[in-house]
Image (cartoon, rainbow over all chains, first blue to last red; front, top):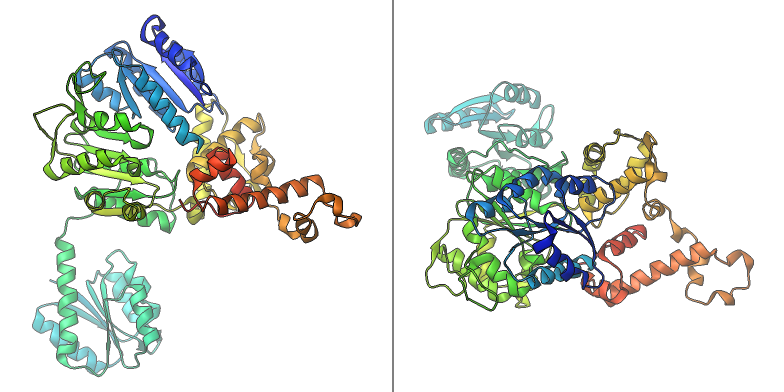
Length: 123
Length: 467
């Protein structure tokens, strides 16, 4: 299963998630660190990305993704939010994520969701 | 006041109905032939038509569909002197309100007329169906229009809706259309992908949790049900909800309050629920995998989405619009489409429905390069093969049951390609049988991905899975 990881600041959560997922067999991960490079990737035909993990570091960052909504159709999104503020969550929900996590949450949850998606995708 | 059209060539009958309707306080117009009736109907809107069948210029049943499918769509009562079961059956099939045989007594006609008028009056008083903004839903086929009518009905109420349909039919798109056309449109639309959530995370995601509610719950977290307050909650793949979560969801829907995991305080929620599934929930109820009381709650209305193969008329429009959309995304010139290309697409079974079609179009755009027009050669090979009839080589097919080495006649000896294709078909038939129509089981047995299975089934013109 091919997944994309977007993490603007990979020193922190993004780096940890990347390391965590790379331990999973049969999951191919590509990491991008800017909205532009993510957008370019999604504009390539046959990219066959099944899941995108968006690690958001600030409230402002998440609004940039609203413009990408048409490119994210038919791709499952795992959203990692920077805080539990109602407004941040409300904006995040507009991206129609399959799962929402937080930068201070257990990263195992993301792996569990990925495994479940992998299972249903294979069948 | 109700406006009635009487179409009968018998002047006495016309007079009888005129007096009756006058006494009831309704307006009426009378015609004595189909053409006169049609002329009157084109000039003004009628609520009720009293239609004779034996008219000088034809049978009244000929004009019945025109009435029923017109904008005013009046109720129609058939009045006939030569009634028969077939005629009555046809009339009801077309949507007639009642079928009365001459001669009749006053009571025999006044009651159906009163009832039809009562129904019509109630229907007119009911909330008007909204003019639907269909957003990204493409197509004009009758099957799709039936669904859109249901979407409009659903959007004008606050009832729970269950959307069913095969995978890839666009259930989420229809759920969004219901929300966006409803009075809740300005509030949130929150979709929960129940199929992607592991059992351990479902309840926390839906209902939220307090700090320390379970290992790893380091902070208080609000659930998506609360986030959907005032708006619409879509439970995608609702059949995948674990039984424990079903119980909590039922309680929430009944009491309109959410209690987060580990919490003591309940939070009031006002949500409109739209659920979707490609599973047979009635069957799951009988297998005790889905709660009957929850099914009752989530299925006040049901919208069954048609498979793409049942709305073949829409394929051309979908292809053209999606090609345009994808070309813009990939920064390519929009390509022309040959009729052979469209014909081949229309001939497919599309077990993965619109999602599968869009994947094929992506492939086509990538494979066509700078070619300005799309031809069958740009399609993936398995989609081109499906148009060929390999079963028309009986000698080779019969050989499939035996080792190739037993063949002695050169003419009967299959080519490797034909042999492989026939063997593949035999394997798939056996696989469907072994898996008892269950796609999950078939995937496990064969080691094939769902998309590969779909394309192979399509290639060999085999029916899909029942489960």
